[in-house]
Length: 351
Length: 79
Image (cartoon, rainbow over all chains, first blue to last red; front, side, top):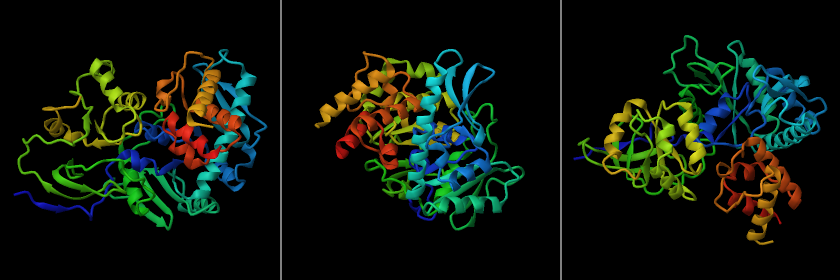
């Protein structure tokens, strides 16, 4: 007979989409924004896609972003690849425009950037005042707890904000969870940060870290999950559970029964297998008529769960965002569960 | 204004911003349906909509806009 399990003591939320929606980047570059974007979280944020030093970040917060209401000194620089880069010398802040030099009227582009910065500053102040986000600051290893206490103080002058401070692990054991430093401040570790010249090659450790941090912060403000009655799920421990019950707020597995026979064909009632066979390039997978049909079916729906493999490449997961309704929750599975998940889905896949 | 009227106005604004007459928007359209709708374009569209309807979106509204229908409803609530 199946064994009753209780997972209430080990509550990582199930869907990366819902976890990452609780966070907002404070820089120092666009790495965390790309992590969010990879699971369909495309919220706008002032520090999402720019490079910002610690000092300028504090100054922006301390002055309530007043310098960005009508920024006076905005310049365009030309990168090696001829892309125009916005530079605000006063804050030493830079970000991409994705326009090539010579392809656009530069004075018009500067005027637009001023409007964008003013808009994003306004939104950031709103977010800060609401206290509904956990702010994330990744920074260099020599940043001190005193620095982060200072940053937390700047954030909390707006509202009851929380800060996840992220450093590279160096020799630290990554199995040790993030550490609460003081109320409202958690220090977490990454195995590695992206190189600054290519922030798209981020580590998937970010997902785990955010789940752990969210738990430490007491669950944050995870939106109710738009999933229906989930009958069969894969637990964080890699066990298949039938009759599983998920917490509607956090997506955590509350209870479930183990399945003794792994060959049994079970599937989430509304899940879609997008794992492919591991050999098919994503571009070929997405160009099939079947996928076009699938995408059509997905528009306007929120019930299905997209399943994708843990270490799929960035091209794959960004393609998912381009092609599929971002409202659909995504469930990321560990790489070592891939073979097993195929048993679950391939016999009768929706796609 | 009805939601249909708001949708028509927003579609006009989007065509104007993208300088393309062939863009057709429905309530379930998303940015992914319009080539070139990146985060900068998104901000441009939000600013244009705010100006056209004389409103200001909250950060919560901006975060929850996942398709054109959400945008239309956010405008509808404020006009």
